[in-house]
Amino acid sequence: MLSLIVGGAASGKSAYAEALVRSIEGRRVYVATMEPWDEECRERIARHRAQRAGHGFVTIERYRDLGGLKVPADANVLIDCLGNLIANELYPLDAPSPDATDVAKSVVEGVRTLCASCTHLTLVANEVCAAGTAYEGDTLAYLRAIGHINCAIAAEADFVCEVVAGLPNVLKGKPPTSNA
Image (cartoon, rainbow, N blue to C red; front, side, top):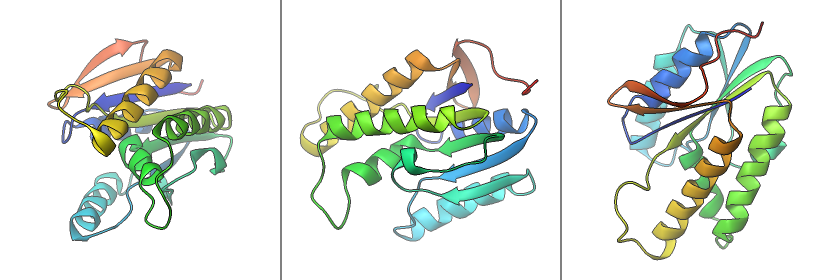
């Protein structure tokens, strides 16, 4: 089963996704995509770790290449978040930036591969395309990649929910409740 949780910055989407995965029986794997670049990132990572402490998550740090990630077949996997993963893929420090369309295709294929290899996959994604249209260059490429990925995953997902101010707004399907 595939679930997509979208929302703006600090909307409560991560907390909602974690609670959703905790409601499903079975092994829990948290895939963290934020690279600890600076103190702000490290503080955010620490906040998220504290938020899920004691809830049975095994954490895997994965900054790129979802398709190459191996998880237990019986796992309920939570990826937080696609926005970080996309930025990591689009803007590597040690290489030229790849084409945004290629990155979007690769991420969607990685999601498909990962979803086929586990019991349930929940993705947290930023909703960034509602903030306006006066963007160009790298920012526009990033926004388009996120938009393409969100649309492609939402089309395939069993459950899609937007979180606004901590409140869930179900857009598609019903939330998973167990693996039974």
